[in-house]
Length: 430
Image (cartoon, rainbow, N blue to C red; front, side, top):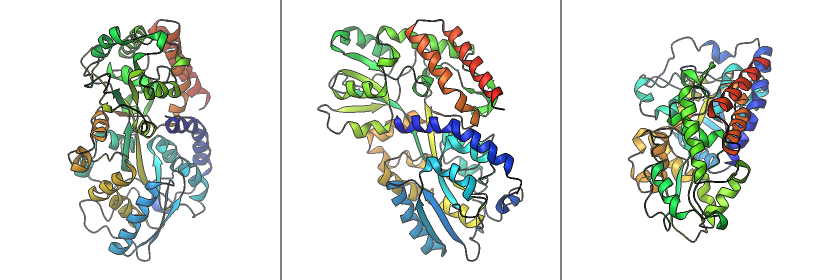
């Protein structure tokens, strides 16, 4: 979770950077001037060809994803005759770096970024629309992935990976994955032993990122219109309140305060075999290589209302810089890097889940039970809102969850307080 929390902390800072850039940039990027015109090449038109003399610079985070893009760059050059230089720039820093490098003409033509920075990039005029994909191609990706790399209904990104959280369970304690939360509650009746720090189930209660799955599973949401309307906050509507009530009921099987249920404690208890099941993401697997028990991963259990919990998801993607001199070549490269065979290779190298529907039944995924479980949960995931106003949500929501859990306060009251704080923060920063 440390990576996700880091992204969240940077988001608020990025909001102000994007606003300043948008206000100070009165020059429309050359490539963006063509944005409203029909593209010479789309997924339907074989005629999308790189510009004469095109050369591309690509940014990606250091690690296996960088190695992957370097391999794709070599293939792309052989097939299209376009030289591609791939440089190491952390994906979380790419939008901020482009605010200066883009207008200066030294930014990457194609860059990698987490989807929750897209709103800032669009506001600052740094990214071109993805007009390579037609409706048919959109249908080849999970809806949540397409939603994540879109802004206010406009598609910008080329999805490379999706991450969300699911249920890890200790098979020596739970031979089969629980299908419902009611099964977990029943299991806790005979398993829980607080004196010996044994709990049936743990998750980071005070963190909206994970607790959102309960709120959204009952029909709640952060922002309306698929996370793009900051004027419509749904964290305190009746459905969110129902979800919060269910969260509070689970303290009966997890009688700890939120300060004692952080990620490090949860991971430690699970590693030691004390906690039977925990909510976490794929990144937890690297911490479980030395455990003395077999574990499994399953989609989040059904809620008492019979609905699937809707987890937050993060979408990694490639984007085309609006200042590129070679928009056709850049779009062609981003599309090429995210086709089925290349995303299959990317998964082999990075183990990051490919969001293409046509890979979900591919043996490369189906042979990996844990990957299949995360992808199954991803079907019910909701991309974290990428609009800048999301930076105002995390702290008030966390405070509300802590009050709900620690002090047994009324769900409606704490959520109303949180929403009022969010609205005030948004107005203050306008």
